[in-house]
Image (cartoon, rainbow, N blue to C red):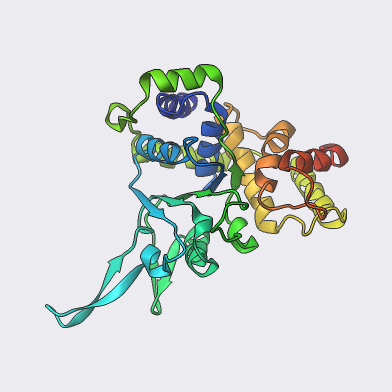
Length: 302
């Protein structure tokens, strides 16, 4: 398993330079059957990561550029009357893919954003009373502009909670940027190897089988209780958030070459799980500060 995981990461690194930790986090979200939210400035490689990652995973890729005039039907699809057969046909939207890039998701209105709620949670869509199953695996990678930018809409908590984790790519370091400037003017995806779908299924199954002990489940519940009862946050972590952290911890342990979760797995992932879920009441704390505050009060042996 470890060789297969390393092969995926190394292939993505051929085009996404100097971001191994973020590549591992993206793979972690995928193996945990979650979705990924990336908030960052334009031009730092968010779209490139999506293209390369989907190609290496061998998934059918689709991209939607979210704008203020985008409609739910532009994402899900629409029933139309086909005059050649005198009957209605359904034209599938880009959501009927295995890897969906929701680019600049917060430039669309809340109504359009909500078109993804059922798809992300249940891997299906309901249109005109008919329910259609999405391809498997189904993975959403969304990019989000900083809220301070003009023309953005804040994502509702119900939408945010459906993303397993979130992070910012940030600028590359000096050495990585020099490599990009010297050799990576184009992505050239054809030169990258794609894994077989059977490999993805086996890795996901292996992630589910990773052991998490009862004391660590106690640790997770202590974290939940602190976020809900401390009075520091506008609202605490949901049960979905806790389930997500549990699944992510298993996937992260697998990526690290272990068949069991350790406390540091949970501690490492916590900032990325809470970044889009928890807000301090005074609004002054960063995601890392929020995670550190939780970890300073909750310990695995408590």
